[in-house]
Image (cartoon, rainbow, N blue to C red; front, top):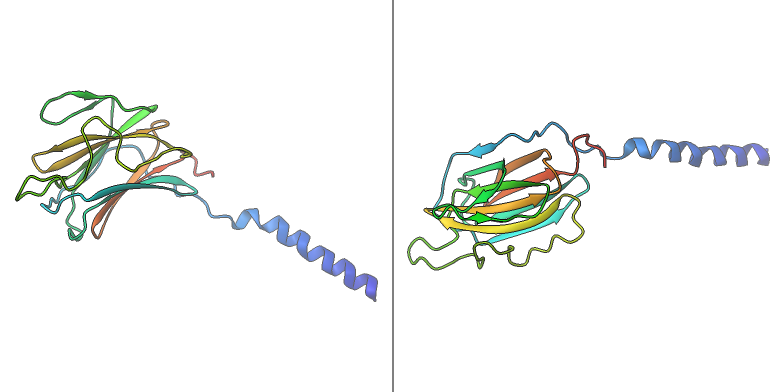
Length: 181
């Protein structure tokens, strides 16, 4: 009787171990790499840009406290990033470059004072991309006529999505095309 109980107990962990990989979360697929836009705009200024790593994608968040959900954007792959107004080329490292435009200024519209401490052509302040699977570089291109422009260097032309959430615009870039982790 004791032998049967021991065999039955030994079989349970083997079955559980075999099913563990099947219960792993699958990464989303189907985002695509075509341009994505939201047409609203706001005068609520950009206050911060931050990034994060996830199992399936790397994420960039543009924060606009007080804007609500009325934040427009345009995100697309470009061959080279060119600064609005001047047309100056801003080099962005990576196998591909996403141009991120948020239809909001990075300055106070009433005073012209900067609300986000970035400088054109320079890496984004307080953004460290070391250890990211997809992101390679993040450069501030400027804020011109109410639009803020950022160059996001990624490993390759990968699928991405854009989410328009309360007080922020979120850009997720998948680690690959297959949805594998």
